[in-house]
Length: 221
Length: 248
Image (tube, rainbow over all chains, first blue to last red; front, side):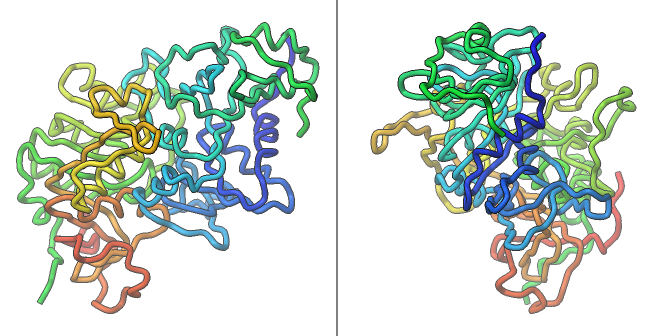
């Protein structure tokens, strides 16, 4: 088995998408990890569905854990200068109103048109939509970070999603444990490869045909 | 004189009737869940309730978690709407995150859903918040982009506005809103702590009767006008946890 990027490394790659001054919303799991890797000198404001802008990283001590300061993943967060609170209706006005510059979500499947399925594993009904659907429709730019294949090595980047959709045609960029793929009107463009992985090997684990970027390179962190 | 303060949680929920539609604030394990009002409602015993909440709740564990199961830290003295489900007082929930028990574990909501005793209406979180807000604001329905081209659009009117498709979503009419805040005055003005505002702030005023459970009641004038997050106009009853712990 070839070595794939671990979660921390994928989160590091996600963090490269943070631009100075951005408002970003991070979903459960690897996306939330990316908050620990804000590039130096860049100011990124994190939005949380449960009514917070500008929260800080997970506390390192038990004394800092405050039940009145949690992020949408249900994890404790820390206060930061400039932080503000609001209710859920206001929070989703920010999301649907396209005030969120970047949203990073986990994924179960992404199609070549940029459709996302990430809220229901068949057989585990009723499923939990949470805020993912509004974020997928409302964020200015949506990045999905996920393993490239299922545990059985089945592709998760597909011609068509087979699971219930979160939103159609919403994904801009897919970051996986072996590749970075951009969703374009012409199709999926392979932009970056994980160390040791060839284009052919990545294509073999991807259902739709990939367009190879002219400036394809190894993933840089 | 306006005085919305009641002496007990039991008194605050005494008129909740069978079949009522009830909004319950809170978000996940964050404090901000009206736990004492929920316990009082368990004691009161109203049946056939519809619960509207982001997460209806897990109730109390009926058996110890299996070894290795993730343990989530909960606020002290906490109960959620799952307690009402556990007590078979609920026939329907409208929610965004019903929760999924780990394989091999039980959850009151999922057990009753499988047994056909409970209906779940799954709503995207933002649509849920806006359907609640709409009822507060006197808007019967609205168009939203969320859900177009997904399972959520099933049975809903779709309309193109400015070249884009939207779904018609209806306001949620509710009888009671149970919300949790930090401090209140006798007019029902509320302030919250941090992210505990969440759905509480959206739900206050979105039902015929809004009941606020607070940590502390302060004199009129003590809450800074600029800091008041929910205005007394939206609140009908206030009960403080200072009035004594509610157990059930």
